[in-house]
Length: 244
Image 1 (cartoon, rainbow, N blue to C red):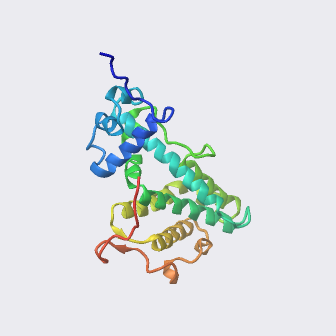
Image 2 (cartoon, helix red, strand yellow):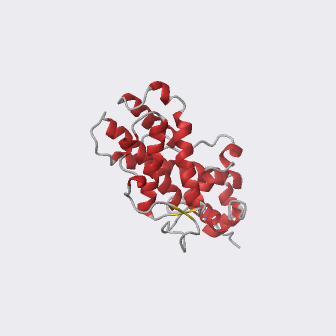
Image 3 (cartoon, helix red, strand yellow):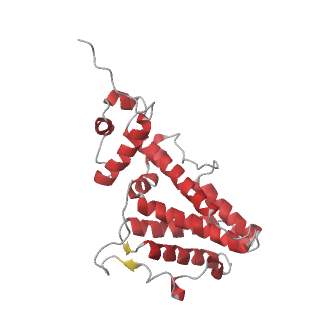
C-alpha cells in the first residue's frame, strides 16, 4: 500500500497560521488548559507530526498565539493613531494619540478575548525566546505607548519629571478597564466603552500633571452615553459580538 501523504500545508504553507487560529478558538471554547497540540492538529486536518514541525509543544503554540496577538494589537494601535487629525506637535494631537492607543487596546481585548487572555498568560515566558510581536512600524504595543507618552513631553503637556515611569500608570489603567470588560464585570456598549477610555485617559493626564481637558469631554461631563455599569445592573452584557 502507498502510505498516505501527510497534509502539512495550507494554501502554500500557512499551516502555522491555521494552528494559531484554531488554538485561539479552542482557548475561547475550553480555556488554555482544555486542549492539546494534537487536538489542534486534528481540528485543522493534519497529523500531530505535521503540527510538531511548527511547534515543539502546546506551550510553544500558545506562546506563538500570544506573540501574534501583540502584533495584531500593535497594528490596531498604529491604525488608530494614524486617524488622529490634530496638528502635528500640538498638545491636542499628543493627547488624542494617547487616547487612540488606549481605545485600540480596549477594543482589541473586547473583540478578541481569547487572544487577550493568552497574551497576558505565562506562556511566552515559559517558551523562552518568544517575544511580543510588532506592528507594521516594527514597534510592539509597549513601545507605542512609550512614544505616545514621550510626545506629551515633547509638546509641553507633561514635564519630563512627571513623565518618569508613566508607562506603569497608563498601562495599568487601560489594562484594568480592558480586564473588567473582558471578564464581564462591566456592562458597556461601544459608545460607553469609548467614553470610559476617555475617562481613563483624563485620569492619566491628571495624574501626570497635564490638563485632563486635553482628552476631550468625558462621561462625567454628561457626554458619551450613560457610562459603564457593574454587571448585574442591566439584564445582559452589552459588549457586542466577540470573535477570535
